[in-house]
Amino acid sequence: MVNIFFKTYGCQANVADSTFLISYLSNRGRVVSCENEADFIIINSCAIREKAEQKLFSYLGKLALLKEDKPYLRVGVIGCVASYRKRDIFEKFDHVNFVFGAKEDINVLRSYLANALEELETIKKIYYNDPINFPIKFRRDRDIEKIVVERCGGCDFECHSFLQLGQKKLNKLEETGRKKLKRAFVNIMTGCNNYCSYCIVPFTRGREVSYKMKQILEHVKGEVKGGVKEITLVGQNVNSYSDPDSGAKFIALLREVAKIEGNFWVRYISSHPKDMTKNLFEVMAENKDRFCRHLHLPLQSGSDKILKAMNRVYSVEHYLKIVDWIREVLPDATITSDIIVGFPGETEEDYQMTRKIIEKVRFDLIYSFVYSKRKYTTAFNYPDDCKQEEKLSRLYALQERAKEISAENNSKHIGSVQRVLVEDRLKNGRLWGRTSGNVLVHFDGRDEKTGTFVDLKIGKADRVKLEGVLVEKEI
Ligand code: SAH
Ligand code: SF4
Ligand code: F3S
Image 1 (cartoon, rainbow, N blue to C red):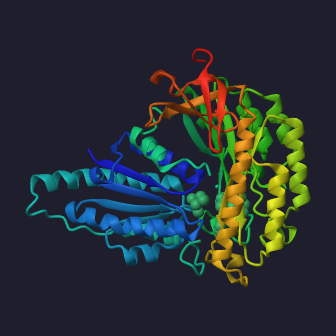
Image 2: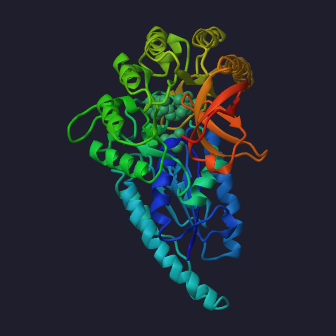
Image 3: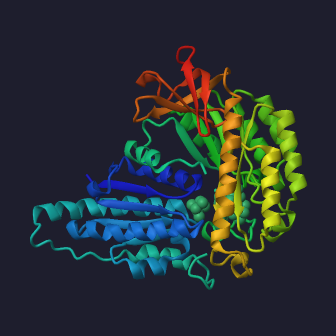
């Protein structure tokens, strides 16, 4: 049996891709939770900020040592960095066997991996029968590189979406081959056509392509039948979903998902403010028990000048109008957001405008980042005279205030009863889960509660979580 290890960096789109591959490969090999046990290591990479790429490169460096001990070890890099740095990866790391970009057809990758696993199983057997004269010289799987490069169409760079699902959880997902997990990520589309001027995703995932509604609904039904209690529909910009067969839009997809029978929740991510309509919130309100009370609506900046330079194509005023719609139609919904600090040209005044919007909207949670310059993006050449130190101090101050607001919002839940999908047990012995609004809750309970819905009376709150007590039996 071949031992497979998956390492996944990045957003829910990568998680959904990894999950898809893991569930297929777990019938053909054993998914393990540690690199040392692995015969086959697959790394799903993220290119969103420079740091994410650095992490990949330093991780790849470490894997070279493993290959010294286990010459038949096979290592592959897939995902977003693999989309545009194939040559670099091959040049820098002799022990990498194949590189397959996120914008390629994942079904081609799936077949490749299935064949590679079969081959590796034979090689592993030979190795253990005759370790001294191990006869097979390892080679790189050039064919897979060829597929990727050929499909590129000759552009000048070789090739051409916060969940915030922690790595620990992903390892668990990988370890179990998804058998025990009650949450599933379903990609409804891939790629992006928005070309926000800072963002590399349109280059790593390619043009926007929506998957067929029929297939998505089958996928969701299959997951629910298999016991999944929470489905997250994933796309870089879910609001521009369009069924390739019928032209049906995102709202139509949500209506269809709402009709599927079963006891499960639905989330979606990410939404672009330019495509948000009030009607969307009305559909969510009509199907109260199905759609989670949480909207992730990336603002990026509170300055119209910066939003324009980012090519976000909405104004702050429009953003605030959407927030008003949410408050009117879904008054109990939480709102989270992404903010970029230190975009080229951002002055102290622009930054203060962002701070002002944060005070106004009072987000339940913010994911904030210092701007990271990315190759191929329009903003790459924008003049930027703001020092990194200044950018970091803006970020830290913003994060500090955002956390205070989170604590204030969380404390409003004290005294209420919240339905929670239970995730797992913590090291400190308590169970944890998330509310419909995606707020973390800790409580005491038995193992059997894991993967079920429970009702909790909230007694405490801080910046990052709520604490509650079970009020009734498993739902
Ligand atoms: N498609 C999603 C975003 C995916 S990337 C959307 O538009 O909502 C997730 C977040 O990373 C973005 O919302 C943005 O805040 C941040 N991000 C993207 N590119 C970045 C860059 N070059 N530097 C810093 N943050 C970036
Ligand atoms: Fe990137 Fe903008 Fe597309 Fe989101 S919408 S993936 S930020 S280009
Ligand atoms: Fe990263 Fe690719 Fe997602 S760059 S954020 S994994 S789409």
